[in-house]
Length: 236
Image (cartoon, rainbow, N blue to C red; front, side, top):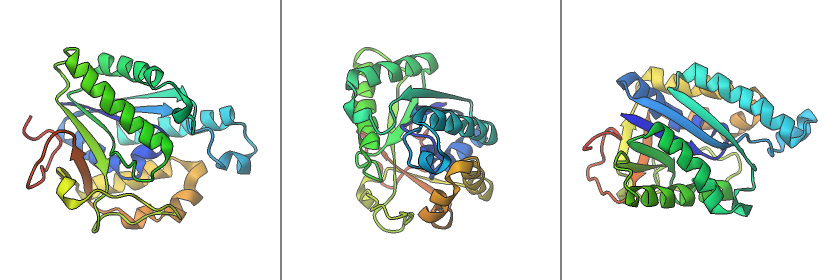
């Protein structure tokens, strides 16, 4: 199947989702990544003496390394304003995402859960826009769309990385899919994180490498699976 992950920033895919992405690639799925911004507004630009545009280009190059390292089926990085999605017309965001969905025709779309895990407003906007667009496109006849999955962490028993950020969780009853990965899939997360050379101190401070194990958790919009599915492609 074709699976499209949609996140707002560079490295969003590497803080956990990439474990499932690599697992899915090994299974023979086509896995694509759409990132809405180049992440240029990060405070790391001040340490490097770079403008927002220069930092964005640097982070884009790091993402190209991620694409190659993970072996993604394809990746598109847009240039929406980092930390500025809440100031955009959501219809403009949806229009650009829709073009990519129509080009790839994925059966499954993945984005953040409603809380965005970190609660960052770009994450919340991404969730809201993608959910609305998914429903609108299905109403318009995009029959290839079968499932909207929402990356999350569970309340208790999941990753505890924070780096000073209070993380948001999903209750156990809302978890609809738990992907269990092998050692190679888990090691791919470390390799993907290594691609973000400019972000290594932030990654280290988050504790993500020590916290994330071999399980990746998803809610599935409009579906209730008990026990949780083992694959995002199950029961389709």
